[in-house]
Image 1 (cartoon, one colour):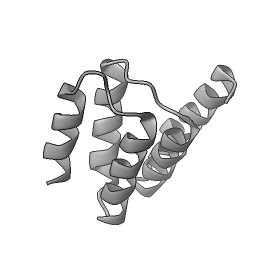
Image 2 (cartoon, rainbow, N blue to C red):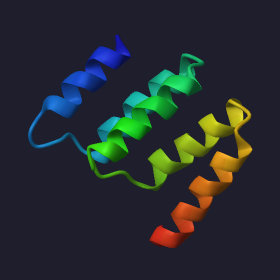
Image 3 (cartoon, rainbow, N blue to C red):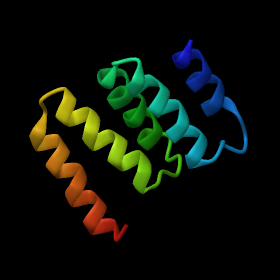
Image 4 (cartoon, rainbow, N blue to C red):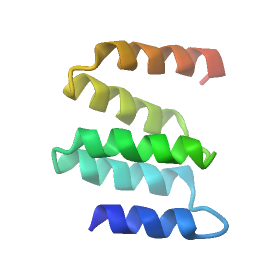
Length: 84
C-alpha cells in the first residue's frame, strides 16, 4: 500500500527527494484520502525531510478538501515566510 511505501521511503538513507514524496502524496490524493496526506506530511516535517512548494500546495489542497481552511491559510503563510 501507499503507506507501506512511505514507511519504506523514510527508512532509506539518504532520504528520497522531495519530488518522490510529492509523487506519493499525489497518488494518495487521487485515492481521495486527503486525511492520509495530512498525516504523512506531519511525519515528513517531524523527521525534517526536505519538502518543496509542490508538497505544500498538495497540503493546502488536502486541508481545503477536509474543510480545514485555517490550516490551509496557515500553510500558505508558511510558504510566504519561507520565501517559496
